[in-house]
Length: 376
Image 1: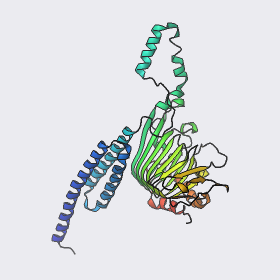
Image 2 (image 1 turned 180 degrees about the vertical axis):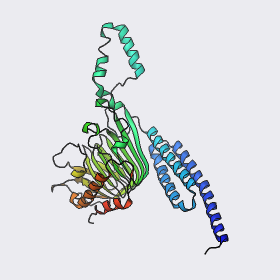
Image 3 (image 1 turned 135 degrees about the vertical axis):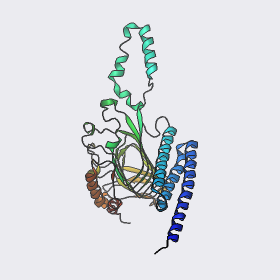
């Protein structure tokens, strides 16, 4: 049995370590805040995101020596830091949201310019004062491309999140519904389901994604549904990404990930990646409930900037071009080899439906990944 003196010494040592950690961690937070504010481009923020993830790991390892209040404070500061990074990234985004491919009206008038032009028109041509307002009200489809809202999912662990929790304007109807750019950052052991849920907005889906960016994700499953523009992926590992439809797909510095992918009129590009596996398209049982039916599967092209000789068309059903030399970074696998994982994920999604922010057990995700075993 330990003496009272040894217990007191141990407690004193732990308190000293806690104070030291508090001071060091505070300086780390301040340094990262300065790095975020000093960033001149979104690329400058990538190492900051990795440093935030490292700080979170450091905090987790120090749990035993930290009082509950200190730990909660550190967690809160990290969350604020991640939100600050997300806001800075959005501020540094190009005006049109990067690779979003949305049509923007040639002259999107402001409210003040509308009033000025209407007033001038009324004075110059009284008879024609009302017709110019009719096309604007009769053609609301022109406005949405210039109205983009930015959403984010960040700093989550062991959580299930669906598109329902990300619909900020479920009461908005018709052509006036805006598009959204979504950023997903710093996730571990999560299931993110962005597909349209049955009954949402009359079956059309309350959340319309114009562009999607994913960064700093580990051991996660992300179902993107249909994205109208681009999907950009950075620093994802040990995960499963299901992209039912997008106009452009780019993936950087990622590893050990399965990508079920369909793009429209574009080549999927990867760079700085290793051990990637692709299936052509999303398995039918995991597609969005109201997806348009397609005949067969569209040919998918993948270009690896680190191994251009291995870039090739990915084809299904026996016809297909093969790479001029095999790639060490990526390969195509048949959907039948992941059937067990598909069934497990489908069952998990049915059990999680309607339970946003519900805890997800690591062993549940691990079981799904075991079902995705691919012969080497």
